[in-house]
Length: 98
Image (cartoon, rainbow, N blue to C red; front, side, top):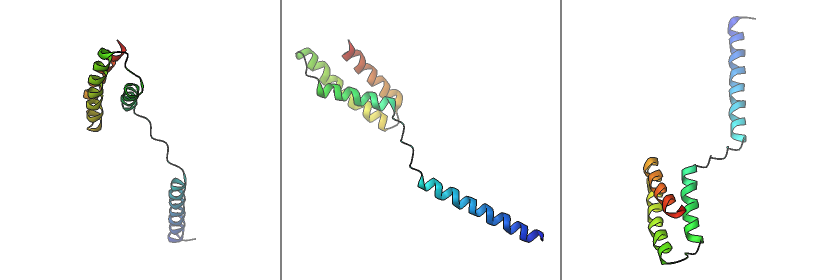
């Protein structure tokens, strides 16, 4: 067996292995995207504000202000400004958890 024939056999084997790996990667389902905890917290607070009735006018005023802050947090997160989003969420948490 000459060296050229052996090299072609290795090249064909490598190509077959590459094609097998590529087809297997396409056949596997994609891993689910990890849920961003900051985005989840913003969404959870938005849902709490929407779904829980206000006890009185003061609570309603706090929730209205918090809804605006949550909107700012959501927008900041969409722009990649995580610290700003977190600072807005902190204000909401302080107001609503009090």
